[in-house]
Image 1 (cartoon, rainbow, N blue to C red):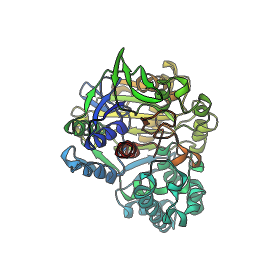
Image 2: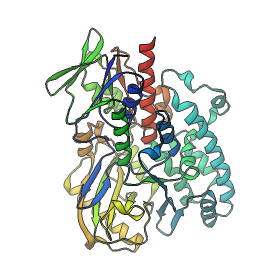
Image 3: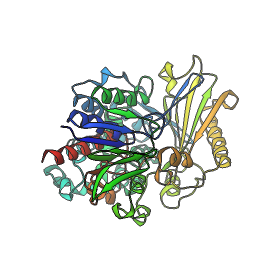
Image 4: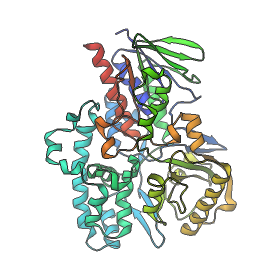
Length: 487
């Protein structure tokens, strides 16, 4: 097949699609505006410290394994993987909860907090596993074209799970607010409040407790390096520092792109850049979605991130740490219902050098702090400094670990940077939320309905936010493209 595809962007979905399309026989060229690949999964290396700038949780290892198997490869051909034990630690105002690496350990911790909860947990995770099998093997492998994609013998028997919520399901059996927070936490990766997320998405709890939390040695950016290597092995041409000025359309058909004043011809254009931004590269008459449409969508949060180098090893922490020592519900309201800078934010702290010595100089610690916030908030140096002080103060109080005088350097990343570096709509960090009205066929389409041979991929389309869904999104769109040229 001599058909040429140009791909805009180099996030996981774009890299995934580039591999599948090259394997299918297309000539594939990928264009990235920044100097390095990976989109939101960037990497910061400074003074011997290595930071994953975006995704830092490696869940659903089976999805990655399936991806590499599609090319006759093994994940181990590209990077090594360790299961974290414990998976993570959660700091509450009056307790610290450790999530172990087996269901027995997790059940014992639940039972310590609430008598009888371990038995409920076993049933809850069994149901979540059922949902996971259906989701991964049935639902997410559909391209989001028709509502009938959700209609399978399995989903018909469980239709109520799409109309009941995670929050309702959890709170029916678990009464302790700590356990409620722990079980509602994983769906935050989907970008929506638990009370607005269908209970079917409890499959995220199985991903968490059932499959465990993993770490690629060297950090999450090793996945980007793996995808780049595989793409190049398949013949994909990759060009960095190549911002796109326009998606070129002639007679209703995508004919290529313009980059830095040069026209690049193609038979197919695929954009893995932020969907809203991708449509701004088209003349208005060729856009599928209006500004009013985007304004009406529920977007996943943005983030305030800090990358900190410490000149000592830290105690009382694990690789992943969640600080749920303030009001969980109020913070989510301040993201979704009444967008504002949170009064007492929840936050996440990641110290990969706890388990991976390659991530920091010997005897030092690499620290990554994340505060989830609403998109499109004011972003100023003063606000960043204020919230760094809030985070550091709470971190020291909860861990009993003084760190303020052990900081070698810190860098921050927030709304303005998401817009500048990733052309992210309103500075969102995770794309569009997976609410009931933004699931499957109700999400922005993989294939343009106005321009022939123009396609989209990534976390604003199907299946949704997250690294594994982005890999799947690349596969789905590549299958649509291949099917068009086979017929």
